[in-house]
Length: 293
Length: 315
Image (cartoon, rainbow over all chains, first blue to last red):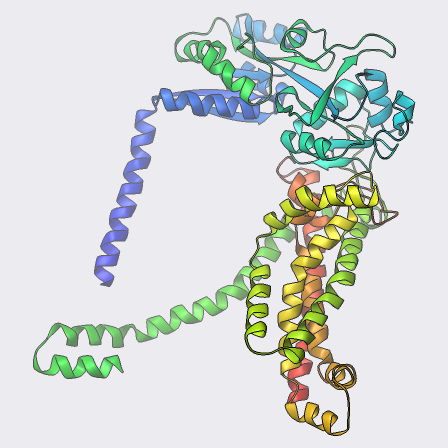
């Protein structure tokens, strides 16, 4: 009995070892992809999907931040850097000096954050200044009537701020985009765990306002138009407005390589830009490059 | 017993049985050791976990975090670019207030149910009640979270006109419902342990049923009932998923039942994934884990000591 058990165990161990060996032998091509934390999910999804189709290519995805990705690209520690910002001029200079080649930029999608309110809320538009006044630490905006919503329409006049959990990529991006650099959010907002949770909380709370990817909209919430300044006409977060930059809380998502990519890396980037790769962008709540509609 | 039977069989016909028995005899010390190991492993794991949590908290504990600020500041701004602040007072108050509210609901409900099951009903009803209450204990906390978030939240907004449905009241009610089964089952055991002679003596003195419960059973079973309550408290403090979903997770000192709050457990659950491994925020989250560990340890120890008191009294 115990002998048989040992035998089984031994066989299992062999099988596991064999599998391990198989993997490393088959996946002879490894693409190293590093950078932006905002893009980690999307990069991971691309990598998984791509690996299912091309078993001989494995894409290793690392986060760390846009700057980390670019530094790693310069040092040759990764093949593709994901960034949620443009490469700085001095970074480009280092690339040219160290690698003797131009950095090549690919815009692979857009990240637009929609401002959500309850469907009963009569508000149509909000400005970036008002958002900063609402979410920022020094902000004074706390009542709906200050935004022109008649008292009594939402049950209570207090604005319930729905935030993302401290430290999430969306939290950082929203804080920087709305409040500017080096500012903190006001405490006491409700922390939603995940983009979907933020929207579903708004749908259950008439007096709430929250932000999340535009892909998460449901029938129970309303997306506000956003203007840069008070009084200006608001812009709706549509795919077109996000692409043109008219919607203020948008940024392109980029991938950088050194020089013109070739071989598997080029195939991979081409696939990311193909309808199949862009479908994943849309699924994860980001704005794809080409309209899929 | 089966050994004897195999021995009889093998003596006349089957040889392999003998070998089997020899193997079993040889294996006995080994099996004993395995069982012993199982027992010791529990102790090992507790210490290993404590050590792990402590180790990860060391960078924050010794340098980096001012302990006075840690316990007295209400400013929890762990991902600030300017100056990260790690004050857990609001989180502590959140945990304590939601636990207190949960107990204010669960203790009368749980002890009442325990008295009813133990003293006032019998037969089928008693069995059904016990099974249903055990079932209540088996509901996963995430399901409780859903109930609070999707059902109770809108009800609270509708009934009280609160601005937001996920708040202290919601979390307190859900936690209360989660602790009731523990309080009922431990409390019922405590009441059952009171000898019948007590009840008979009280009856013969002309006491009513209520008087028996209030004047005789409660004093006699007080340690067991206290242990039941403390175990319920432990359950409420340690609960994570349900409170994360039901309390709103807002860092502030609540001014009323309808304010959203934030607890220690929920903070760890929601922020650990995003914090940089090995960074200060990460380490401070483990420090919160350490604080929680100490609180639940104290509550469990108190419950254990009280239960021990019960046993000694009965001897």
